[in-house]
Image (cartoon, rainbow, N blue to C red; front, side, top):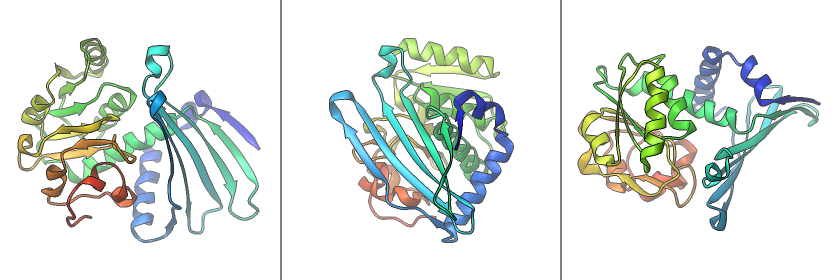
Length: 262
């Protein structure tokens, strides 16, 4: 079995090809050609953390993959990353382990960011006035980076809980060429941006339905397990359409009223 560390994986990954493969995976899933067993979730309230075990196999593929992904949200105060994890690639013919990807959660983060890029390419308004980012962590940064490939707008407003984290995000976004506004009031993101990405582990709604202008696109990636919430239920319920795929029983979608989805 081959073992690859995070830096080896980063060096080897072609992000353009990765985005194409992720998009193909979405198509295969929508066509019913992907086996995705139920997600296993662990929650550790005493440590403000969670863990999920996910696996999938595209029919006809030579391999399948099992992933362990963790999020422990007080880690930064200890000098550690919030996200961690690894992936195991196995033969779909013999069941033998073929590769251990010690990515430290990076593959999960970049996959999510590329999914945001794909969603924006397909669903974002034709004219994006300002990009809104809710959150200041790694995923908030990756989402902005990956949007640059499909969105011309270079105006961003970002919400965070602490001014120090907002200033760090400002510096990051400015190095990418963005004009940056920061705010401690999430309503300001909703009022100014018509493409919004939410990236937090919040357990209460951060965006209210009454704040969101018609025609706004929201890519909500943070509420990925039971108990998490970033969007007010009424906001999800009023959407013209949404794609929650296997997330319908978790996060924002588990709290919203039943509506058509795509």
